[in-house]
Image (cartoon, rainbow, N blue to C red; front, top):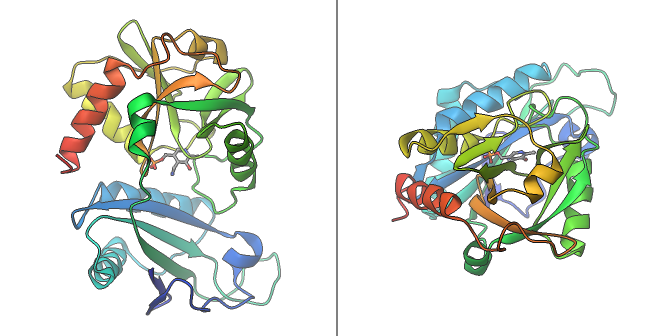
Length: 279
Ligand code: PMP
């Protein structure tokens, strides 16, 4: 796949990043995954906003403003020859001999442009299984940091039990998924954890909130327990690459209601496809 690293366009499998790079050695950086539908980035301003917020939170000066990042993203998209792609953007504290203290060097910016990571149509039609897992992450989950070890371990554990996602539980309530936000539907209202330092402010969450408003479906930002999730009428998760994905089953085989995707998730997904130009 086509990639970008500090001013050069390269292939993503070409050696380009020095060993003494802080993303590589420390995970000292932040990132975004942006979806481009038919050549048009979806909610790009919101993604760049979040990237700059994450960077500021870790005291990282990216060395590009929004316009400059947009130019590189546009150029990479065009050179990739793809029209539907997942664009990964990463900024790190740069290239310097390994030392925990901040270096004086400029930040590194890298990107990759890859075809959509397609979710099997079957998963969307039948809904997916999830595993409940303790949320073992740090307390700044609103920062989209490169440090994803707890997320990786939880998602791998879920996958080994036949589940698409691990739903994280902290202090008795659901925070979010390892790479998604989590919602239940009860008595016609959508419920999801409020924005806090314990979850990432998902861009798809913003889109879903807007769609819910349009469709006059109440959108309540209030945490819920795993038990409330089990007793819900419907559940779903959202992310840039999964869009709106119905959740129907837990790792122990128990079902959410009849174990079929519900009407609210379907309505949100249909509208999401329209606003992203897929229909
Ligand atoms: N939470 C976490 C921990 C994530 O990694 C992601 C995926 N970036 C999300 C939520 C969903 O965010 P978005 O809708 O912006 O992809």
